[in-house]
Image 1 (tube, helix red, strand yellow):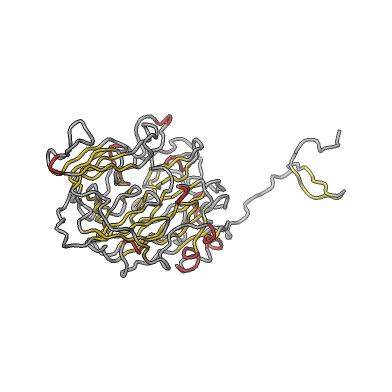
Image 2 (cartoon, rainbow, N blue to C red):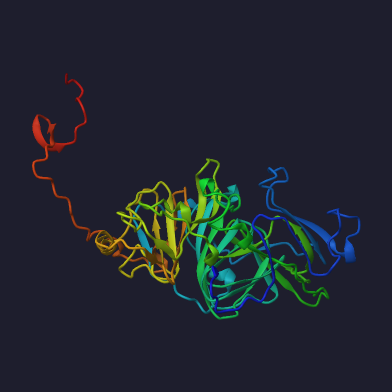
Length: 474
């Protein structure tokens, strides 16, 4: 069965479907019929609209949700800056190292002393949240649940959370979501939530999308199914608590332009009794991904493994793609089966959830680690993988068993933060020396093969390819 065998059993109910119009009510009759904003909502609830796109966005892109709650989200004190000197997750250009070097990180440490909000470490990024342009790439490692009387949201963008270790019990305004390793979760901009850690410390990766929202990639000639199927995405069902006596103070934490702000209120933020719409959090089991590959020869582009994509204004070019490398069969004939050597106009940030990545043999790319191959930075299989693949018996073989690697790919040049490059102390200084410097020359000139000569300043400069007549030659 194409699902992950999770160690932690599911405990919540969900609605299935990606980009679907969902409606859910925790109490029957809480959703008004026909109207969105009646003069009096059922059961004395307030109505509130949550807009994830402009009102006038095209219908196929428009994301709005109507909420029916006990008190509106606006009922809180003014926000005040918090931890101004220490909390900054904004990829400001002056703070980023723009470098062409290939980078690889050892596994990032667990941190038992911080909660979700304070576990967010910006490793790399590009763009500007205030302009709603670009991305941020984070590592998170938390050991404590958030205060039970708190909620957090990011005004900067959508969080795509890739959990590597532990379990996340995420209580969102729209309902609860349980996230386990090999599941991803997307929490859109502005949605408030609380994170508990039922299995102890957690660790993983986040791609924050400052512009637009994630969509499923177009399938083209593949047809109407495969890759990530829409029916396998799960959205929460409405769930609420009643704590409006005024005796308990709740803290609302906001990540706004990368900085932390806090407001207080005397009622729970988790009081949405019903909702309907297209703007909501969701999760997806990567074990349900239906992989496509070549059944004749050659290695297709890794875009065939795209789970979610966030488009730029240029067709076919993504601000961010989320790509995975799941267990799969390789059957190509007369083909170098690992990924080829590559220089890419896109930036490639890779992480490993579990197991071993089949393009690296040396053991330097490990679960909870990462790598970054920036715009036009050459990369590819290490020397051991090349030697093994070029001499392999090309029988059908399954690769990636027990493994799940992924990639955040972006059309943007990604800068690395001071923490990511130095303070984390995880960058592998010997990455190139281990991976590509050992590559040997295998070229052998065929006997008797003719070669053209290059003349430089009237001297024999050696061989040159046949480039046709030189300028001035007849």
